[in-house]
Length: 104
Image (cartoon, rainbow, N blue to C red):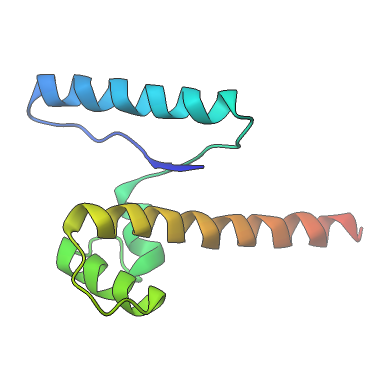
């Protein structure tokens, strides 16, 4: 399971609601026995676009290219798919490190 780390918001009410939603999602994943990967927006942008300060349109564009999507993606859709791609890339990398360590 992959989820984006919470970011500081100017709106305390929105930040609180986001924190509650994240907590509920993480708890649901843990109850199901899923490992949870948390990624900052910068990590996701780095994994998808190649630079951590990419803007949302760049994330949308690269997500479409990476997943061979030919329709328009909304920002939230691109963000969610970007987090999933980041997790897939990161998980694969960590698995390779673990396998390399088993050879010693």
